Length: 142
Image 1: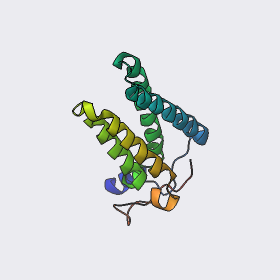
Image 2 (image 1 turned 90 degrees about the vertical axis):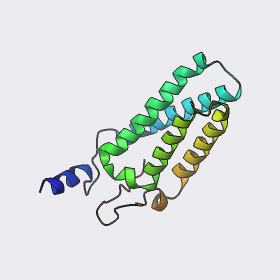
Image 3 (image 1 turned 30 degrees about the horizontal axis):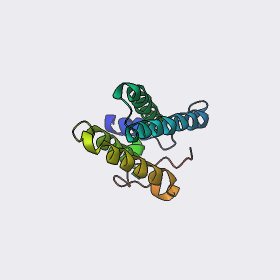
């Protein structure tokens, strides 16, 4: 019973809504794209870390906020292609301190992966790779 109730809370049949969801997500996405662009450009043009650090933090926080809006709707996002791509991008970001000389390549790769995954058709973005018989994906736009 507890297991069934927990699954219902984590993976609702209808994704949870909140006021102004679409406007918030569009604003967060615009902020995220802007800050990641500045961050990548700053590294390409050899700007000091002290200048880039605030942009890094806003990029991290805006990306996290986008992910949290998805998780609030349903944890199913973590098993959809779009959620797995986010986890992959986070893992790649975590490699940068260990592969500092390759940071531009890694950031370009993350940007490339993000652009492709966010513009692929909905049927692929929202495809569940695991637990298809148990979880209902969030098929909404925005």
